[in-house]
Structure formats: structure tokens, C-alpha cells
Image 1 (cartoon, helix red, strand yellow):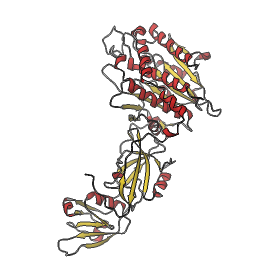
Image 2 (spheres, rainbow, N blue to C red):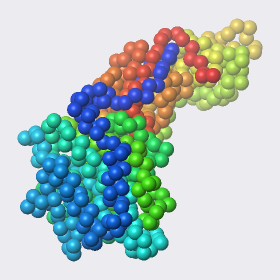
Image 3 (tube, rainbow, N blue to C red):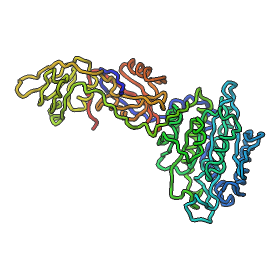
Length: 509
């Protein structure tokens, strides 16, 4: 059911500002330095190492696959991370001859260090082909995007964490899964044989094929698995990426074994391409600058999970997509149909008066030209929409009739609550700390500010809200201006709505 709230103000000006989230200014200089250390050149070099033909496509269990694993372990040794395999080593072997590579950064908070955030990516690929190859067979499949890109990003993110003056509150496990291409064997094995207590894993991030960013668009899968994922990822999106959120959880990637055991998961992915599972998936096709953007976003998300106050709560009921239905129009307060063909003369022409409505009871007639409503001149239908939605009841409607020499004033008892800022909303249990717009009244302050159906509101006047009751209270107590933190497609911006009494709303040119 749509939620509503009240106005009596009209818009003067509203400005849509595309800015990084507020957290950016609050992060320490050490955090910013760690974030900035994630570089396109280092990522590109690491992808080149892993996708080199000398590793023969990194097939699990082969000499090339083992060499890739040794290389990863050496990098963690260089960064002075402890191993998280059996007996403290970097490798977790499993039959017949596969190996996960695991490193750990212990948390710094005595009360939270037992909680674990997993940041993982599979490092194996197809070798010279095989059943999963799309051909041609017999050639090295370098797997630059799949998944040297995700593997390199996990390494670079681990290095960024190593630059922080102190570890985050929670423990972070950096995991490189083997034998993903053979059926998620590495991640399945770890979940069945965890080297850290599985019940302590608070969230899992999976990076798979993140090296081919196009049009700044990044797919984010699994956000329905944990309450608050979308908000957390969006607030971390200082790179301005266009995030395409998916609420389902695929069973074809390494996050799924974690999800199947009740752990919130999210996967980042830049999309499929013609080189997928072919020898042509080469390092020179990697968008290194795009990979930097994705890796920096993931570092920010992982840091917030590891150092923040809470992590997403697991949800057993994961919706396919909560975007529909998003519509939820407010109640018809007056009960008329109209057109604005008479706009050159001012006003809107009534074409229909519905039965047993406030308009009929007030004596409004078909053919009336409404020129004034609730003390405001009506010049077009945008004026009319906004005025009817925001007016207090009772209101006076002024009409011009051909048979009357003077305008006629009618008193109308409107139904429903007035919309103060011109929008309705709903909530979703997958999106804690957010409300979702379901309707924006044409010509209203919300409309003039550029708000749209599907926008998420995360803050009011710089304040978080626990639920929609608190949101409604914050909005209703705002006087002539309203400052919202709004997310659309994962990009967060500050939206000020400004209003003033007795000012006619005009359409933009």
C-alpha cells in the first residue's frame, strides 16, 4: 500500500547534485591512501601474469594451475599475510590434486574479530579447452577476464588492506578457489571443510569476470540474499559506476555454496562477451581502468563490512526482482478528468466528472475551465496535478463557465491526505534503511527535483532512518526545504527540494 505525507508548499527551485556519498568525506586519509593504491597498471600487470601462455590456461590440477597457485601464495607471503589453510599454510588441498589458496587478515576488535568476511575469486580456467570451451580446442585459453580479472582484484584489495595502519574490526579471508570450472569444486570444498568456523562467516563477496567494464555498467548479483546489500554497495560507489542490481542468486558461481548454507552473498560481474571460454579471452582486451573502478568499489564494500557496525542479515526468501510492481498512485482526491488544451488561455478543461466524488458533490461540471484551485492560479495540468495533490481540505475551486459572466467559486471537500512533497513510497524487507518511490506527482517539488519512480531514499537531512515511521516523521517535520540522499542505479546524489508559498509551478522549457 502506498505511503503518503502532507504539503501546502510549492516548489521554487530544486537542484539535483551528483556527488559521492557522505561517507567519502568521513573516511580517514589512511583509508583514502589504501583505496588509491588500487591501480589500473598493477591490476593490468597481474592479469598479464596470470593470463600468460606459460601458465597454459591455469586448468585445475595441471602444472599451469599449480604454478598460478604458487604465484598467488608468494604474493600473500610478500604482503605478510598469514595463511588460512590447514596448519596455517596458504594452500587447502583437495582431491584429486586441486588447491585453494587462502590468506587471512585477523580482525582488530576483540568482540568482532571472530566474524569473518570472505572476499573470493576462482583462479583456475580451462587450460587447452575441454567440455566447457566454446572453441577452438587445443589452444591455450588464457582466461584473462575469466577469471584472472577477479583474482587480480582480490590480490590488489588485499594489498590495500595491508596498507591500513590497523586492521578492520572483523577478520577478512582472501580466498582463491580452484576447480571452479569443474563445478565450483573449490568453494564447495571450503564450505564443507572450512578452515575458519563457517558459522562465523558474516558475508561473502565473489568476483568473477570483472575485467570488461562497458558503458560504466557493473552487474551486482545476489543483493536479495542479505537485508541492506543494495544500500551498502551504493553508498560505497564513489566511482560513479552504473550498478545493475540483480536479486536472484545463480547456482553457477562460487558464492552459491555460501548462500546455500545461510550466508549473505554478493557477486560482481561486468557481463558476458564473445571471448568467453575461448582462446581469445586475452589480457590485451581487459579494460584496466574499468577493473580499477570495480576493485576500488569492492574494497570499499569489503571495508564497510569488515569495519562497520553490522553486516547484512541473511534472507531465506530472495525475490527475483522487487522492481515490480513499483507503481502506487495516490488516491484520486477530486474525481475529474481534464485536458489542458485551453492552456493558452490559462486553466484546465474538465472533460469528466466521476460519480459520487468530491467534484460532483461540489457542483463541478463537464466543460468547466478550472482557473484557480486552493488559492493558486492554474495555468496547465502540471499546476493542477501538484495543487490538487498538495491542497488541504476543504479547498476552493474557481471555474469559468460559458453561461456565467463571472468566475464561479465552489467549495470542495477533498479525500485522502495531501502530499507535502509530491511522492508516495513503499518499503522492502531486502532494503533496510531505505524507502522506494512508487509515484511522483507531476509538477510537485519531487518532480521538479528530478525524482522518479524506483528511486531509493537513504537519508533525510543527513540522517539515517530506522524504518518508514521514522522516515515519515523526518519528512513531515521539514518546513520549506527537504534534503534527501537518493540512489538511482547505484549512484548516490544529494537532492534538495526547496519550496515557497504562493508560487505557481511552471513546466520546464
